[in-house]
Structure formats: C-alpha cells, structure tokens
Length: 594
Image 1 (cartoon, rainbow, N blue to C red):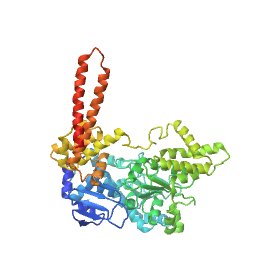
Image 2 (cartoon, helix red, strand yellow):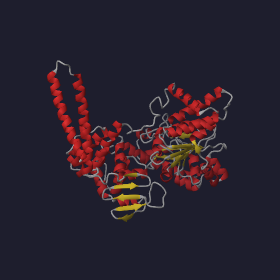
Image 3 (cartoon, helix red, strand yellow):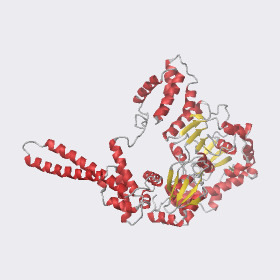
Image 4 (cartoon, rainbow, N blue to C red):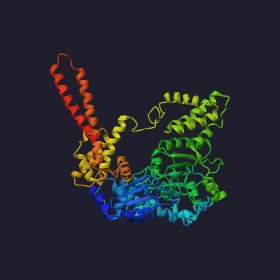
C-alpha cells in the first residue's frame, strides 16, 4: 500500500518529532539537537541525537539513522504502511480516503472485531463453573493467575450451537461466520473449539486473529487444535506470544523460540519475556523475517529427542539464512520449560535459559553422539549432517571455524573436510553455494564497482539539500552516471524538485517500502555529507567527464583500428572526432589540476 506524499507531509507537520521520540527515550536539548540515551542498546552516555528541524535522528553507538517513520517502524516492529497508519492515528489524520479501496477490508475489520468479542467471551467462561476443570489444569501446570490476563486465556464450553446462536444474536450473518474459522466446515453451526482451554493468538499489533485450544477430554486424539487460516490469519506469518514479548525483544535484541503455548507462558513468568512460539508447524521463513524486525539473535528451545533435534536443525538453517545469531537451549532433562517451572520454580527455569550454546556446536554434538572414529561411513554420515549448515554461513571466518570444530570431532584435517565439502556442494543441487547464495557479496571492490559507488555517493550527497542537487543537475545528465541506483536517485530528486517538493523528503516519500529508502536515510543522517559544497560537486563531475571522455577515446581508437585502407574519408572523420575528444579531455584534466 502506497500513501500520497501529501499525507506523509501532513503527518510530519502535525507531529512533534521530539515528542514522539521522547516517548521512547528521554531527550535533552543542546544547541540545534536533542540528545538522549540510545533506545537501541543499553548505555550510560547519550549517543542518540534528533534534529527536529531536519526531521532526522542518528544513533552514534549503533550507527542507525532515519526519519520519524523509520524510527517508529524500528521501535514498534512495523512495516512502512503499518507505521503510517500508526502515526496517522496519533496525529488524528484519517486514512480511509487515502488508500485504494479493498473489497475485503470490510470483512477484515469485522473479523478483528469478532475475534475480540469471542476472546472476551472465552475469558468470561474460564471464571465460571463450566471452566473449573480448565482452571484447575492451568494451576497444575504452574500458570499464574496474572498470566490469565496477560495472555487473555479462556475456556470454550462443551456445548453444541451456543456460539453460533450467540453470534447470530449479534447480527453476524451465517455466510460470514462460515468463513470466520470458528466453526466446523462439515457442520457450520458447531464450534471448532469445544471443551478446550483457549490460547488467543494475536498479530504483531496485538489484535487477536486466531485461537489455539487444548482439549480437556482425555479421549480426544487431537490434544491441541489451532484455527485454520482466514482472511486475517496465516499460521506461517504469526507467532504466539509476540505482543507480550515485543518490548523485551526490542530491548534484548534476542528471541527465544519455544515449542508450545504453556512453554511460552512459563518462560514469561520466570522473567524470560522475549519468548514466542510457532503455531503447530515448524518455524518458517516468514516468522524469522518478522522477528528480524526486532532481534539480532534467536535461541531455539526444543526437546532433545530425535524429533526435537531435527526441528532444531531445520530451524537453525532458516535462522542462518537471515544472518541472525543462532543458539540452542537443549532440554536434555526430558522436561519442557513448563515442567521445569512447575517442578523447580522460576529461578531454575531462568537459570536454564542462560545455558544456550551456539547452534553449530549443538548440532555437531548431536550428530556425533553415535559417531565411530574407526568407521569411515560413520564419519561421512556425520559430515553430511552438518554440511548443509556450513554452506548457509556467508562469513568465510565462521565457516573456517566450523571446519576446525568438525576436524576436532572426526579427527581429520580441516583441509580434507573442506575438499569433501566442495565435492558435496558440486553434487548437491539444494546447496546454497550451487544457487549462488553461499558466497559473501562484496559490492564495490573492483574498479568498475568503485566508480559506480562514487556516482551513487555524489548523487546521494546532493539530495541532502535542494540547492546542491540543482547545481548538480546543471552539470550532468542521468545518462552520465554509471550506477543504476545513482541514475534512479537522480531521476527521483529531479521529479521532486519539478513538483516543488524539498529534498530529501521528496525522494524518501517516493520510495516508501523500497529498501533503498533505509540506505539513503542511514547515510544522510550519519553526517558524512554535511560538509559537502559546490567545490566537491565540481571535482566529482570532472571525474565523471574524464571517465566519459576516456570511454569515447577507447571507442574511437577501436573504430580507427577497424577502418580498412579503402575507407580514407571514414578514417579522416574518425581522426577529427578523436582530436576533438583528446583536446576536451586535456582541458578537463587541466582544470582538475588547477
């Protein structure tokens, strides 16, 4: 969803950036800046600064910078459209007419309201006589009364059509209720959740979008049941406990991923509040991508049985793909976090949570439990268990360290293992190296890349102030730039000025959800271009002209070599052209030496 530049500017004009940012960290004015402790890390000396007159912030300790929208997105873990909606509501600016009409939006809003209503109803039943057995179960599992409210726990009574009748009395249509995910597909009037403890599942904004239910019937084969996917719920994209964990995720930059609802609640009660769980499925890329908004590290809290080890391995591969630190908290005692909390108390569980180990170290240890150093097949099987993880790692240094660790276990040189790894990669289509994903991307290392990055730097520096870009625009055209991002940025800035919009806001508003927006914000707010002047632009433009003229020289020289003896007129024409280019090149170089 893309918003107009007018509405983005209205939000900026309506909100005081110092006031918005000050809600997350205390600010004190010094000159034209406001200073405070970094909201992104723990520190004692203020390194975080806001320049409200420019609409930017910069954190010197973490090298993070941006504008009002990127700050709130970072702090709240929101996408750009979600951030706009969040700030528009704070500013009292309606967005109903701003976005293109969505025919399903009305149903989404109604579903959010429906799940909110049903959550309250289930919570009410938990405190009634019908919910006595459910309440007793929760207490026996060590779930404290405070958690009933924190996690909005409830109970769905063992009754036939009560929920359907109740919701029909609230004017919900049968067709709408059929698509709500609350009722059986075979019997649309019968609720999906009957005689079950209810664990409401909320999205990143705290809106209940689904339910998990734990059966109270010992004969029920499905002990746990989750809502099906609906218009507002996709189980691959949601994590249980996220709203309750979000603040702790933001401050610790670390997420614990447990296996179940009660494990999440037990860890939360023990003080480990940065904990979430996937929803009846293995950890997904979408869930890790969501967590990456807040965290740099992930700790996997899975059972130490064969299924748990396999789940840890699959999850670790996904986490590594997103270049997050990955650790494992092994529950080798045979007890899950909820059982440790119930039997040994919160201190024991809190201490257990500190016993994490790096994922590769854990996976190597698990893979080597049945390893026989005298058996070549045993060694090969072990290495092939860990090769997929090693190939996901982009850092050459980390890969080498892992090869050394494997070498210590299998008692073979790291060089020999490296050779085996190469052969395994060449024969494995699924390897990220075969797909070109295992190599570390190093942009800007060769001569061509360095020239392209210089072009990008020039245009980026000129977008910080309108007058600098106007001066640049008089000197070069977009086609003079060899970098595609530089050309794109040039055209966006040119369009902004033609629409009489100031820079850099005009460019930023045109990018919105584009990854280039964050890169531009970070480099502009770091202060590296503050000293740029027309003199710097002149020097950079001369280099571009020299490069362009030298390219023309090479083209003409190549054309001259290709001319045959019976083409004297063509030869004369090319030589005249080359003389003009040579003369112009000498003049440009002479000016650069002045």
